[in-house]
Image (tube, rainbow, N blue to C red; front, top):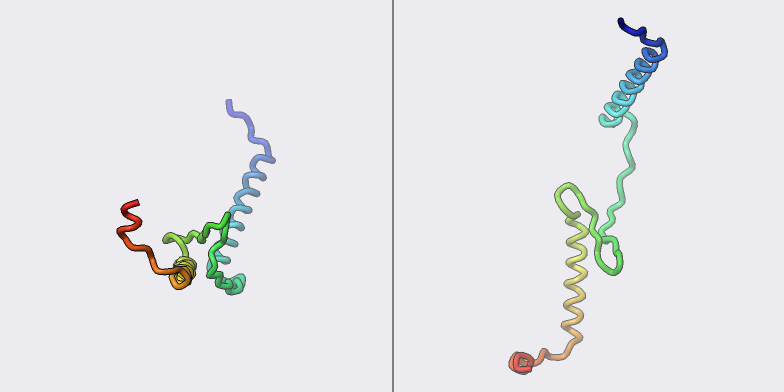
Length: 98
């Protein structure tokens, strides 16, 4: 013996189907760019700093190369300024023997 299906179950099911079709169609139209374009993103070449450490944005293929290149250039400039301001390095034998 089969129980009758209440009328609201059928209507709610069709309502969910219609909502799902509308959402999928909206996502498809948005992916085609027919709803307008997003404004261009501003380039942020500086990595975020958390506790003094560089935090790079993660993208599909690792880290953003422009952020890494900017950080390496900053570190190279810092190394060059430290080398320029430091006196002559000690003799190799003096620090090896101690």
